[in-house]
Amino acid sequence: MNDICPWCGRVIDGEFIFCPWCGANTRQAWKDDSGERLYRDERQKRLSHIEKSLDALDRELAVLALSEAMHR
Image (cartoon, rainbow, N blue to C red):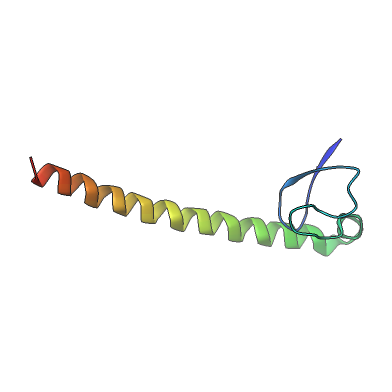
């Protein structure tokens, strides 16, 4: 059975005691209510980072499209 690491949000095998990606002790985190809060905080940080990256890529694409249109 697979679980989600409450620290980094990645899918891990339920038999793992530690997350192979971030090294968090998953057994302790599941017992601790703050682990869920930390998971949500970390997930929000990751989503925010992805959103900023997508915005930057969108701006770059707009500049490239404009440059291509001007060179025709």
